[in-house]
Length: 332
Image (cartoon, rainbow, N blue to C red; front, side, top):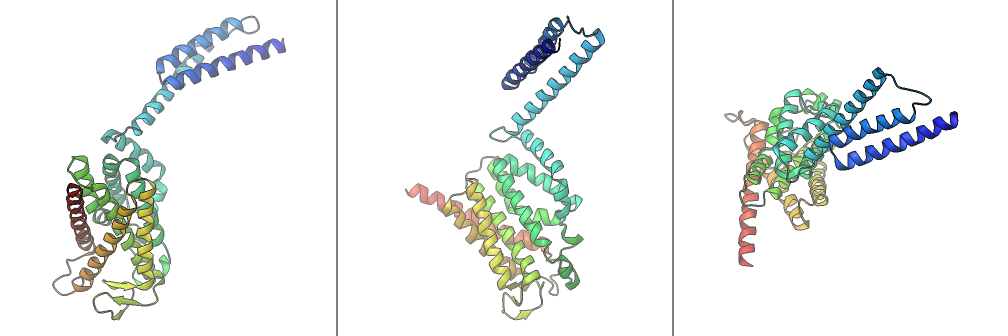
C-alpha cells in the first residue's frame, strides 16, 4: 500500500510540475486553470482505490488552485508591464510604486515625506523618458549624496553647517537639484531634437559633484577659501571651497559619469563632457553664492534659487553642446 501511495504521489507531483511549467511559459491564466482542474480530476480518479476526496475537499482544492493561478497571472502581467520598452507612463508608475514601497526605509533616511513625494514624481518622469537606466542613475545620485550628507553629521550640526532635519532633504532640494534634468526629460519625451539624455546625465553629475564637495568640505576640509577672493573663511560659508571638497566633488562627477557609461547612456567622449560641464556649472554656482547670497538686499537668493541658477547654467551649456554637435554632424 505504501509503495502504491508513493507511486501515485510521484506521478501527481510530476504531472503538476509539467502543468505549472507549461502554463508559466505560455503566460496564460486559462491554461493553468484548466490544467489544474484536469490534474485534480486525474488525482481523484487514480487515487480512489486508497483514498477518495470528499466534494468539499475537491471544491477547496479547486479554489486554492484557481487563487494561485490568478496570482501568477497578475504577477506575470505586472512584470511584462514593467519591462515595456520603450517605457510608458503606466510602466513608470508601476515600477516606481514597487521600488518606493520596497525602498521606503532608505528613502526616509535621506528625504522628508514631502521630499519623497517630489522624488516619486521625478522617478516617474525619469523612467518614462529614459527607462530603467535613467532611474538607476538618479538612484545612484541619491544613495551617494545621502551617504556623504550623513558623514560627521553630529560634528556638522554642532558647527551649524549641517543640512536641516538631520540631513533629510525636502522638496525644495529635490526640485532644485533636478530642474535641468526634468527639462531634458520633458524635451526627450515629446520628441524635441537634441542630446537630452546627455544633458540629463550631466545635470546629475553636476548636482552630485556639488553635494559631495560641499559635504566633504564641511566634514574634512582643513581650510576653506572664498572662491572669488581666496580669503580664508569658516566652513559652511556660501561660495567657500576647500581642496578636499573640490577633489571629492570632481571624483564624484567622474564616478556618476562612469555609471552612466556602464549603462550605455553616454559614450566616453560624452562622459568627459558631463564631467567638464559639471565643474563649470559648480564654479558659476559658487561665484553666485559668494557674490550675492547673505548680502544686503539679496537675502532672497536662497539655496533653492542658487540650485536653479546652477541648473540653468548647465542647461545652457547642454543646449550649446547640442547645437555644436548638430553642426558637426551636418558638416560631416
